[in-house]
Amino acid sequence: MAKADGDLQRGLERGKESSHICTKSPKGENDQEVEPKEDIDTTGISCYSIPDFKFLDGSSLTVEVAYRSFNPSATKVVCIPTCYGGRINSTLNFTSGALKDYHVVVIAMLGNGESTSPSNTAQGQFPQLDYQDVVKSQYQLLTQHLAVKELEAVIGFSMGAQQAFYWACMYPDFMKVSIPICGSAKTSPHNWAFLEGPKGALLNSVDYADGAYRAKGVHPIRGLHAFGRAYCAWAMSAAWFREKIWQKELGFETVDKFMVAEWERSFESWDPEDLLVLARMWQAADIGVLRKDGDYTKALEDVKARVLVMPARTDQYFPPEDSEIEVKHLKNGELAVLETIWGHIGGGGANNADTEWMDKKISAFLKQ
Image 1 (cartoon, helix red, strand yellow):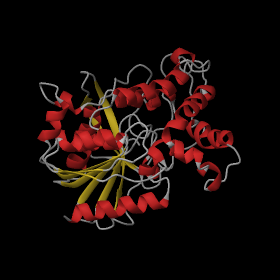
Image 2: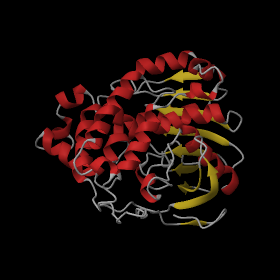
Image 3: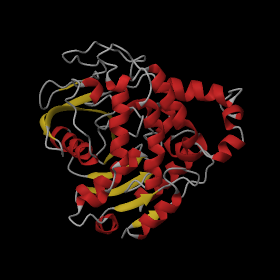
Image 4: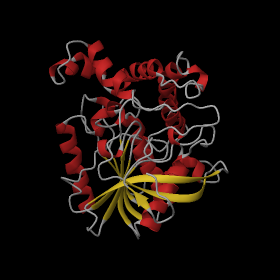
């Protein structure tokens, strides 16, 4: 899904890595094999295996964490986790600009279809995912496999931004800077409600079959199309549609043709359970759970890292007003609002002007 939140492997044992990714759905007892419609771009991607990984819900599973290193000879390291609907090679990585002199490690969060996910795990064996699981797996990859001693920064967009907040709370002495772009430390009720729309469209589709699509040997295209159509209008702003950017800059004759090409079809390669497990984790985001008292504002106050919070002015589900509140609780926080009509996806590399603005802000902040 290149447009929702970005521009849109198996390691055999600890310390071993491979350059392919598991995209084939493993068969359960009654499963038929269902292939996604499109292959994932695996250029430059490796995977690190973590045996007997302990999840927050108490379950254990050998997990594989997919990643790609850019400029690995550099001494300063930056981690960039993927976003919702993002793949490693569609993630905005700033390696030709602000991060050109850094070793940049782009990591596929668990559940995205590149790292261990419902789609490449036997049906019923994948646990309910939590951001703590995702960040812990990334920390183990960086420290145990790549021998990283310290991170200059964690930079993330959307769900990647939420991971950046969790990183700052979970490993405060391991990183210097956190840069969440179009994201929040806690998912708001409005954001939660928005996600119920596309989730409901998928869950109630005929071909999703109440989750039995894999056993039936069906890739639920109708459900995935409905998911994308329900999601579409939220990702850009009302001004974006009013100005007919879908026509003037993207070349589509009608809004409907834009929705079909860029939203319905963009989801065809995704497994529904991957989309759902990530959406549920997104809805449950709250760094307050990392404190005994559950207070997310105090969790923000505890953050040691310097934080550059970059919301987009017209983001409909991570609005800048929410970011303003969060920055007030950060000891070393700075707010930089992206002035764009591109809505949420402006922060994910959807257009050059917004990307250049963010690149300059990141470069300046890292030099402070």
